[in-house]
Length: 489
Image (tube, rainbow, N blue to C red; front, top):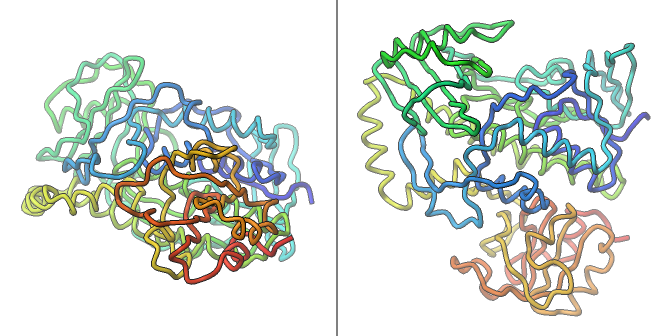
């Protein structure tokens, strides 16, 4: 074997996955056909959950100053995200190009083999390994590994080569996305519905304006090259009456509203993550964020299998947990598209949604859905409110190690938080300390929602989700440790 895992695609999902694998000590080769990063802004910002994920890996400081906001939308209807209980607000103006730069620098420091200008030509799963045919700068060669993960986007060659089923609906319209210099337009941060469609305007750093133009009745086109800025300006004038033809385009792209998801996230020794597994209307900026969270869910599980710590059954939980998340993503983006992009016939529905959103439980539900904070995995039986949910940030006192539950996850390992200084608990976990850190400390304060009241211990998976808690879990600690981290050494 040439390496332990091949990752195809050096976008946010591929880079995050490579980082997670390297944190566990897994050898990984990342194949990327582009010689250099595009520098295009594309996906903007992070949801609250992705902010938590980056914080759990100690990455937030690498992004520099981050502008956050507690204002968002659902289908163009304002939603107050301040009602959520997360430690972070959403980041609004970080371009995907910066995200990719930060992640690539991190992954390079961790020792991943990133091969730019190396294009995947085909994939073959032989049953005991995966063979990838690759066109490099100088020659075509074969690369082998026990596992391969496709993070190569909506037109994934990995998905097509291996024959993943990818059902869904085709695009019904074409929309434009452009970053432009030299425009002085009033912000339309959550978009504006117009008689002929929808437009969105957002200011970006460096005097750049982000435009999204959705004109109803435009048939989808499969383009080999990006649309011209003249097409964008013409559509803008038809919708708004304003002339923006004097603008200087930085980059222009088009997209559609196709909605598809693979039926299985794993097929033999090949897995998919991110847009390779699911495509949808980019409503609410959820696509890149969901892709990053796919990678974080998969990374530690694949590493445990590669390193022989547990059996392949652990990989089944990747599909079991992330496929439903992808289904809800497709559901809510289709709903937002109907609200946002339909004509006057949908206005009564918009009016009803506007009324409903004023009720805090409804607003909270929609905000949590779009932010990724609503996720609850079917991890284990029990009554504890945090089982299967993300671990809230806890500042710790009395700890000789990390100062918070978030800091405890920086290494990408499991964490057992001993909140009651229980020596018996620590002895029961002793067989797993090569892969699970035991932190004995007390919380400085407890969450306002009461989710940790009376809790003596919490087992947190590397992806930040609670796998066991006492009291409240029906299983004992060794059973939970073996399920998620393999047999004791």
